[in-house]
Length: 242
Ligand SMILES: [Fe+2]
Image 1: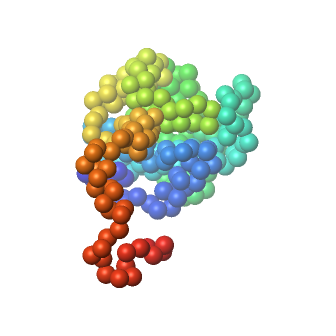
Image 2: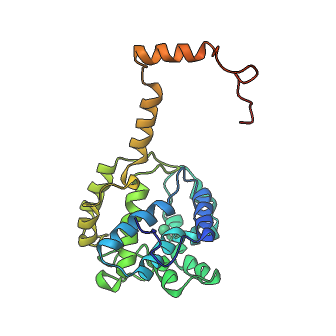
Image 3: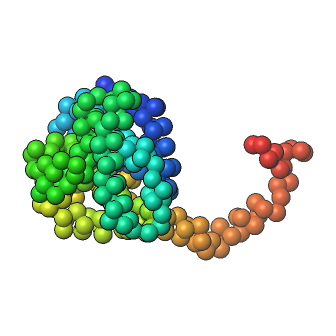
């Protein structure tokens, strides 16, 4: 597969670092910006984006919530839903993110995607309440990918929901918050690990950990743990530094 940042631009280590910094600031358990970048790029390919537009979208996905980190509000990490005044304050993260992206030398195209990543298809979004095709296609893609990734991962105030629940949400809000043709395209994506909900992923990991060993596995484990007579002297126990 091509680079998620397009053919001409490799992932900029600096942007990956910023993305990890934002995830840590927001108290996310898993990489959020990076996951959005992968799914947004999968959509960009299906909408025949040119490679430089894919690169722009990938960069914007990584830093889309830069403004929230710069605002550095205490309430972001609380394990409760935000109050109305806090929610309105948080709307500013789009414009502050745009300014911060400019300060950090990112292109005007990236700055605008950061500004518009919360605009809604029906014009009820923020900060500019632009609607439909006034919103660049890349920003509409970001909205869908951001929402899917947010729902399927845990937040300080709620657990991760299933991928099926997230898709149901996209369908319900298609034509309201989301561009219907992007939702339709999103539902055709397959084969990306980023489409799995962390709720399901962690459950499968836990099931694997606690799965009862078969009789043969138990026997093999017993034999392995009862010492290895053939290993050279002094090498039966690995060093703690290995
Ligand atoms: Fe955001």
